[in-house]
Image (cartoon, rainbow, N blue to C red; front, side, top):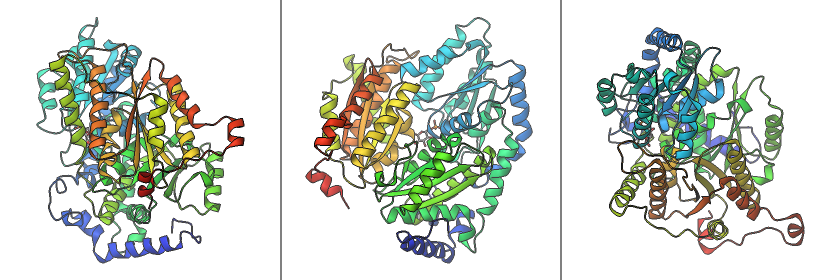
Length: 568
Ligand SMILES: O=P(O)(O)OC[C@H]1O[C@H](O)[C@H](O)[C@@H](O)[C@@H]1O
């Protein structure tokens, strides 16, 4: 078994074995492969037309030479940069490939832009030479507000640049018959990749949505696919699901969650750090509904075993030959302390292809075991509707609705007084990432984790809305939400819109806050002011008692009645 047998995990091992036996008895794996929707729900809605990821690899294999020719043509056109405009399933897989592999020699640099925060948009705008950049407009639905706003911005920019090649600098990836497909035709895009429509965004990394950027990065797409294909074959094992790597991971995650260990905590070799961005969307959006779900914890600092509560299930992705010393030490300590660990070993970076498929299959299996629908996202729309309402208000009143924001100290205290075992803190940062912000957010997570022994997540807004946002509202009511909102200065107009990028980002933050409150989720909003790094560091300081103070009084927080209720 992948879980180390020790006194604390033995009952869990038995439950996993029983679950795998049940999967065999109910023919769940065979029925998954024959696309039987009753594996998940009695009605076929958003199931029978969402299982294309099981077979898309074959179509992609047939398209390999086309992808190669396309990437070669981009090189010959002396493209220096590729900017991908997409959200959620259309951006996170490419972001993982970008961070993990980087561009091959002679290949253009890839920028993945999945934000409306003006500073972030400006950062990418400044970094590229518009006349020598290719824009990948990636959207399954072809109408996502962020993507269309970014498209309008870069379309304008390109057309204001000397030597531009207009529509020839744009490529679309979308489903058949979308508004984006039409737009691409009307504006004379270089190329449109029409994706198989029966694949949901978060299961699309091994389709055109992931493989077009992979080809442009100069990756060996054939090798990536062949690893995915091997894993797919392994995931066909039906008679003994214990030999099916996807089923084992899925059943284990679900059993662990049912037993209270619902924080799937990803620990990786340093090179694989970004993998969590993709897994977060897959697990959270697929399973975070009907008041249950897996809570993915990625990018958290590895800490001493006593810092973790009994709600953790660790999954380790270890890359052979990477700088693994600290990971190995941390794992050994966790193992000794009796924490359950599931280990996955990658021989080289291309094994990522296999992992993508394994996790997709595992998520579908976990969905079955948890009894939820792993292919819809019922609560994502609410925040979009709220954002639209806020924007309408801006249109009629000429400004964003005023909302009192308590001082940071008060807001943080108000949120964290509800800390209790099994809860988690989600930091939702509407700002522009840079190494200082990343470091400050990491420090904030660590401070919360050490002081309150809680799992933490951190996501940039509006990116997280298309990733963990579903879980926040539809999953277990155990999250404490800390929205950190940038001043959005200087702002940036969106061509042909009455609102700016800054207003859109603010409206998204406000819209999501309203959704969280309407689901009775504890959520506070803190303004990051003119100096976001400083503000975040101040929050860290509030949680980190000075050495002298901590000698006098141990840092404890008396749980409030609502926190006590949240305890299981
Ligand atoms: O690819 P698109 O249609 O633009 O969708 C982008 C994202 O939108 C929504 O938020 C969905 O919840 C995500 O699953 C999806 O990946």
